[in-house]
Length: 421
Ligand code: SF4
Ligand code: SF4
Image 1 (cartoon, rainbow, N blue to C red):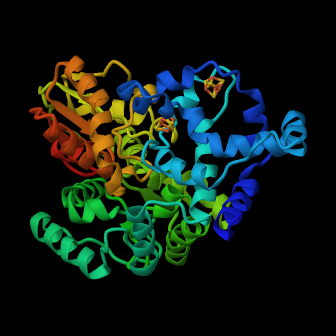
Image 2: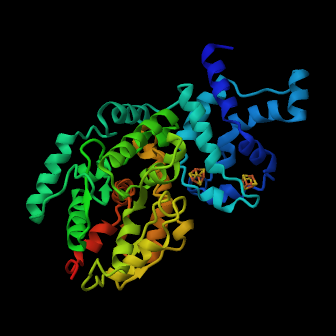
């Protein structure tokens, strides 16, 4: 056995905690998770059955944590995962899983398959079985501060455009502000209109807010690839900046996994609670609207539907705010067939959109979103994640669909009336 496979087995062994062990021993092999996963549903390929994507980890668990496996090993009849398994499963672990959590919703015995997939990714990452594109995105974040190479200079150039267009000043490094906003690189580069929208909304609502020049990036490539150290470092930067500025709230932007990272995983990653609260932009907008600080005027009568970002809605619990906000600004809002916590992923989550190797499969699997949008009968899709937005636009273009994608925060800003009385 070579050093690399020894290391991979050792890392995989470390990931098999009591929770993973109890999940494997509870599986009744019903196959229901297969019907929940868009990779399986759209391709019909049994290899894309969610629990099967965990086969290397299951093999090792069976060999080392069950009586039959241990006896088999003693008699030379039970084999654990080998080099071939790691090489073959790298594609299943990274290319054919968005860590979207839909499979976990249907398992009759409550197995959180996504939790196990993330644990397996940690072992694959530590032993070097990872896609090149995702590795580079993590390295750029650690070196430069952004997976797309966005620097403070780039951000400032974008902010200058927003300030010129809005006539407003965007506060940077304001100690004692109540809120600190994070952005994703994709918003800075592809959707600066999001930054313009929050600037206008916060100004109208009289919000005391700031951006930190030390940490403005919300995207966490460590969470996606399975690097705990990387994820911890990225979260720490935002936490340290927020605590230095003394803010009460940190605003997670329209980015799915960023919310998972900073809201749900962060305190465990850094080993302590924060001195501030994390709030998602949609929760904040809904709160401002409830308090009468976000005043809206008029509604769009364009029929539109909602794509739920998995990490914000299903895994993050922000289910009602996008709907409540949409009803405020759109009279023709209709739900897709599977919606809310059971919506399908855009196909680009979990780092798949950063993994060039996975592009063909991702576009094939987008067939599920295509069907959903066709069934909804509308040509406008609203979402609240910059990554979903890019992936949806690419998929719609690939299938030559005449469907527009818009960001929810921008839609809300479009119907902004005025600030506080
Ligand atoms: S987390 Fe999503 S993409 Fe991954 S196996 Fe489960 S349903 Fe499929
Ligand atoms: S749905 Fe749950 S019990 Fe059924 S095969 Fe999948 S993981 Fe096992």
